[in-house]
Length: 224
Image (cartoon, rainbow, N blue to C red):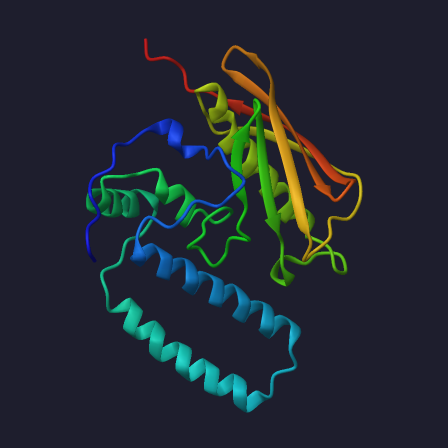
């Protein structure tokens, strides 16, 4: 892989400031994004098509052959190993979160993917959730709604400069959240009490608020 010039690591760069998705870091990651999109579309097509058995068998053979070729390359298991490897090549760590996250990763075929940014003291998100995440008919699975909230609030707590793991997440479902329709998410830091940070968030489909939440995130103790 061709190395890019080193880019300084800035923790504040984890939060984008634009509703536009950031460009890929280089050609390699652009190709990874394109492959993730193809895999998402393949999954959606398989879920919504009555595919003949023989065509499925042919597809399995093709994918198994490609899987064997991919597995023959070096493996990087887990975020830590991936971050150490790719950050060493690029000199830039924050892009890993935007590429590999199972919720917002542009290069992760499991991700919807959710785009998050900050503006005017708020945390914003946008996503269109496809057929692979269906719960009630033509609606987003409730667990996926909670997943989107956890990522939005967990990532967005950095707007205040500190972050910690989720302590609790309480979701209220006001209406079914539609599939295949642009969703707008918004959240804010409500208050801080000691090591606990409270955030609230909402999901909107056009002018309909479909869900709201409160999350509590717990900062690490200062070393004594």
